Image (cartoon, rainbow, N blue to C red; front, side, top):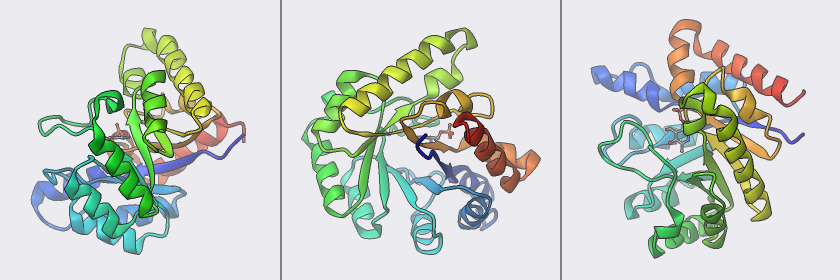
Amino acid sequence: MKHLDLSVNVDHVATLRNARGGTHPCPVEASRIAVEAGADGITVHLREDRRHIKDRDVERIRAEIAAPMNFEMAATEEMVAFAERIRPPYCCIVPEKRAELTTEGGLDVLRAGPSLREAVARLSAANVRVSIFIEADAAQIEAAAAIGAAAIELHTGTYAEGPVADRPAQLARLQAGVVAARRAGLLCHAGHGLTYETVTDIARMEEVTEISIGHFLISQSVFEGLPAVVRRFKALIAAARGA
Ligand code: PXP
């Protein structure tokens, strides 16, 4: 089986830090600890309103953490210019609404207009490998390939956060998305809402090469500590992959 990378999203370390306006807990330090515990990469989402991760956090993680950064961003001029400057190895383009609590759904590539294609072209020219956060829908996946994305990130939120009874149908939908990505020649990542309970089914999908986990992983660290939670996710992934 292909290797499956765990990218740890440290946005909510910044959420806690920002609650008191100081410097603790530091997302750069959290990134270092997560990588030491076995995380394969670090994800950050620099939102337009800077509600959690700030520009300086992204710059420092890029400069100080050896593991690859996955930079989540909206396809705006400001974020494309930021990514061109810091040149993360990977970026993931997400839809972003100011009032949402978290990213609510996949990007509608079919209706996105030329600015998305331009963003993908500029990022690719800066040697940033671009993925697009997307629903497991064949037409959307083909559209992502057509505008030059290298990868898609399948939105696992409906599966992970929906009723347990719906999970078989949601898994079948995600699996069809994985197949569509392979046919379109795209790498396939996955993420959103994953927990100890839901990661296994996604990790069993052989073509998925990276999963990104944030909220549960960081919150569970309050009880178990960040290294223990990263190690447990890595063990669950290894077991799912039959390692
Ligand atoms: N992938 C994308 C594109 C996201 O926007 C998020 C949330 O920031 C995640 C993965 C991680 O989701 P969660 O925080 O629920 O693990």
